Image (cartoon, rainbow, N blue to C red; front, side, top):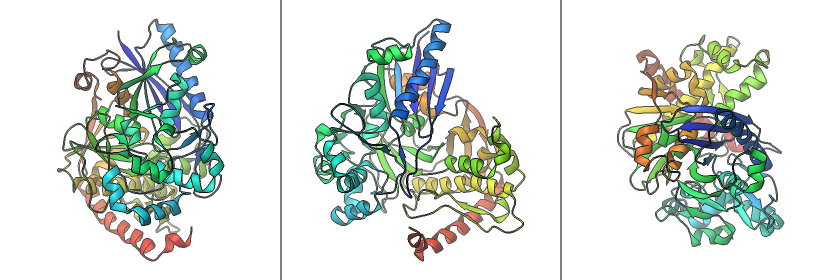
Length: 503
């Protein structure tokens, strides 16, 4: 029996998942951690937390394999994207990682647009200038922490850091490179002009390789620490969202996926780069080497649900089924949450608004509002933000008939039903809600000899449909009305300069 081990390095946790050649989940073990918020708009994390988490989950996977008498063909690595870790010449982090959600570099974004033009950069990189991307983080670091910037021998992302920890190699793939704002989208190479804007040369970045490439073999010290064999192949599968899209069948027109974890991401397939006139939808490299993905992202969705649990559901603390109990409570509130509206801009807004100054908001509260209404408004608000992005992507491509959903939150029947009605489209939930890890193994399978090519891997391993959810007509009408009210609310805050007044 051939098996693969996915190492999925997320924003809130790292998971090791073992799959067989048919895509069946044989083993899963996760380890949670938290980001740090040292001051407003700053989001950081100790880079050692990822290597420590990787070691912990790989130890558990190795123990499982020893107990059952088999060994995987290799490790497929996928991770969150667009964070920045400066490394010294001795391969040690010089500071905490600046996370993808960080907003300290808003001024650098404004300067970048003024000097080089929003559309010109978008057409070259497929990315809209925004604090999330590495180029703007590098410019902030060069200006505000010049000693660290000068001392850095390498600038890594989270996936790069984990791959280096496992193999000793400095390699990254096109999907991660296309989230830096330093890679030319058409040629999949580091762009000299963009590197000059950042103030670095190519030697301070990782080598770019196609997704699905073997980065190297597992180093001896890591093998000893984890119980896995030295030299075990480590494959770079790519960014978590691009890998999830592979597992959810987003390999042809007419299908989109909405993956809701810490944040939410909406992706659709593209044979060639496509660009939105107002630069609101991203275009980036696909985990299917040589193809592209359209993407719209939302910073905080599942993270808000978790925050609300920790801050306002004290009675649920310590209960393993806390999130299920929250959704049961939300089910007591109807579609529209009895008028309560939640805008999920707790760390600014990505698509479709692209407003780093935007703030999270619960609106239209009254003394009659209940906690159930607020929980329901979180679920409604997440789905409505995804709806706006689906509408925008659809305007650039063909009609979207089906939305595949994944991520931790889609374990909830209620949230899946809310999504179907909010989008007024069929929603398909799959057996494996954590699609990123499965997609990573699918991408890695050809390099590890598990399947002859990527298409064969898709056919054998692609997520199996678990349930198709159809929209409820009355609820869909409610959400159409809510969409207009949400736009009025956001526009009132944005056009009046209210967001900026609270920076």
